[in-house]
Length: 236
Image 1 (tube, rainbow, N blue to C red):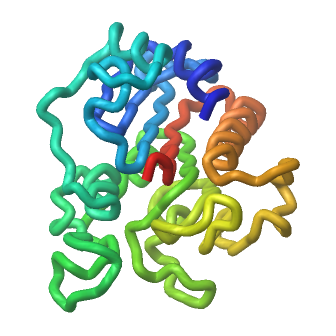
Image 2 (cartoon, helix red, strand yellow; image 1 turned 45 degrees about the vertical axis):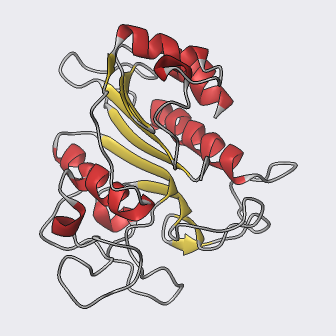
């Protein structure tokens, strides 16, 4: 996350800090006047007062500077669990309306299917209709269909994102994460043809691949704005 914070976030125009979420209209590539580039960073299980701008003891100078020039939400609430909160963040709905009212077990009721339903649209789907390139990196965790032969209709590429690197499941090793995917294909740190660090660590891998997508964006479509969703498993 160091590169993302030190080299990308300080160039942001505005910021909204939502507990463990940072929403950043930024200037990594040239946006249009009406369509700023947007980065959404979700830190898993980050406490309200952990970061410096909310009085925490952890030094977070770059985030603090963004908060100083942006907006800090002091009455924002989440669901206290990772997957329902993600469902709300991705769809703008209450988690039960999106079908993810609890954890990743289908309880047989519409609000508790543990799988994004077709009555909702994701922010990726909405941003694509506005002409954005869309990318997702990190933890997905809004479907219990997370096996290699499962229905992948609620995976990132089928829900509005053009590129994806991360884990479909919500848990796993930081050194060999389970359900690690690039696009729709399962990979491992050893057989990933596009990312081969000297030492694999999932937090670093999320950051490195987010930066990779943004660099590719500047080469592939510098005239278009981008939206990228960066969902860390840390500090879970």
